[in-house]
Image (tube, rainbow, N blue to C red; front, side):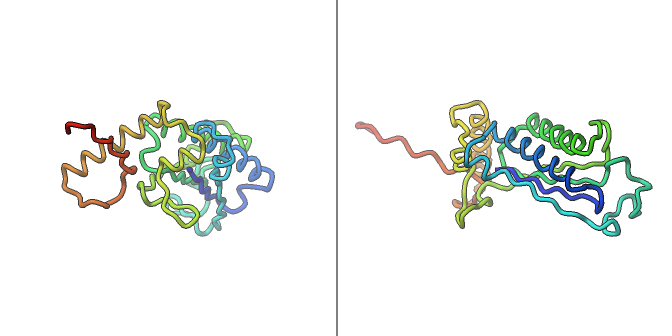
Length: 191
């Protein structure tokens, strides 16, 4: 359920490059979801564009392009659920989003060294859809991410470690930020 918010300086994107960038960034989102070309995966693949007036985009204390390298007035904020990606996966997303932006502009990957990609993790329990709080497990179900796969095993290990940390620090029940606990195993006779 990642979302990409792309901020760009006024005049930087014409309709054709904006259309191309939207398509390429959507492909990045679907890849981030593990190739989730399901109806749920497609419904969550949101790219939002915000044009910023040149006089409102300050770099190096200036509003002109003096301190900005070619294609530098781009900022992509990628919102992801907490615990969704390892650091290696985040590095892949940084590279993929940057490449999608540069290729959409007909630039090389080496261009746009000032273009920023920021990954922001939304704490478990703070993501909602349809008026309800949804967990990372629910998102995985919606987009079709296999819960027995390597990716979700990493997610479970992350939240198990977080639960141990919360317990050791005596956080009160219901603090949030944890996947729902798995159902307790039924008691067997003699217990």
